[in-house]
Amino acid sequence: MLPRKLVARITPDEAPAQIDARDDEAALDCPACGYDLRGFANARCPECGSAFDINQLRAGAARVNEPTWLDAADVWQPHQLLIRSLFELIVGAARPSARLTRTSVTAPISAALVMFVLGELWITLICAALLALGIALHCDASPAACARTALVVWAPALLVVRAALYAGLVWPATDARLLRVAGVTWKGRARVAAYWLPALGVWCSLAVALGAAAAPDFALPLAWMAPTLTSAAAMLGIARAAGRRFRQIGPFAVACCVIAICAAVLAANLVLPDRFEPPIWVYVP
Ligand SMILES: [Zn+2]
Image 1 (tube, rainbow, N blue to C red):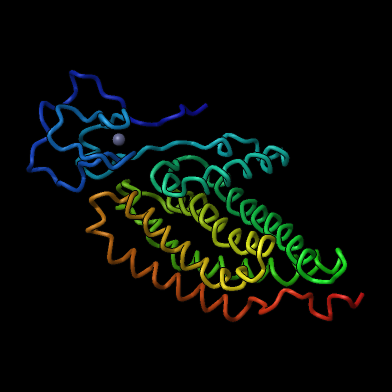
Image 2: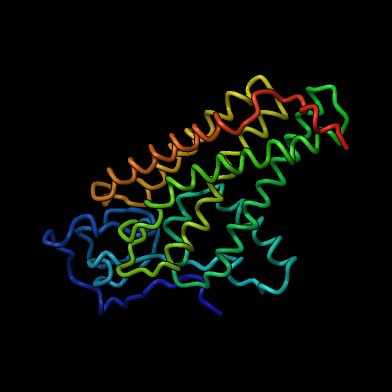
C-alpha cells in the first residue's frame, strides 16, 4: 500500500544551513502551498508543514504526490469505481487547483482513465437529471419527453462544450514546470489532466443545469458564460499552482486559456439548443 504522502522527509542533520539568494528564486516556493521558502534554515514549509529534499526543490522537481481514494480501488469492482469516482469528482470540484499540485504522477494510469470516463458520466447524469427537472417545471411536456430532451439534446451538447474547453486547457495542466517534476512521463501528465479536467467540467455544465432547474431565463445566457467563467477559474488555479513560476509559464497558460474560451463559446453557439421546449421529434416513438 502506498503511503498517504510520497514526500521526501529530511532530518535536521541533512537540512541545509541556509537557502541562499543564488538559488533559482522561482524554484524555492513550497510545491504544496506556494509559500516562499527562501531564507529558511531547512526545506520544511512553515506554512503547511510539508518537507522536501532540498536538491529536488532546487532542481524544480519537488512535488507532493498524493494517491487518491480512487487510485487504491480494485478496477474489477464496478461499485467501488462508481462510488469513489463520484467522491473524487466532488473533492476535485471543491478544490480544482489541488488536483494540479497534489495528484500523484506515479500512481497507476488506469485509475486516472476511470476518473475521466466515470467523471464525465457522472457530470452527464447529474446535469441531465437537473435539466429534465428544469424542462418539466418550465415547459408543458410529459416527464418522458423532458427526460429524453435532457439526455438526447442537452447532455451531448454540454459534453461537446466541455470537450472544446478541455482541448485548450489540457496543455498548461501537463506542463512539467507546473507539475514540478523533471522528466515527467506522459502517464504522469495524463493522470493530472484526467483528474483536473472533470473537476472543472463539473462547474462548466452544472451551472447551466442548475440555471435550468431554478430560472430558465438565466440558463441560456449561462450556457455561453459558463465556459468563460470556468476557464478564468482554471487560469487562477494554474497561477496558484505555479506560484512564482507563473512568470515562466504565464504567457503560454494565458494563450491556452484564451483558445479554450474561444473553442468552448464557439461550440456552445453551434451545438446548444436555443430554447428549452422539447423538439417535436422527441414525441415520435
Ligand atoms: Zn507549504
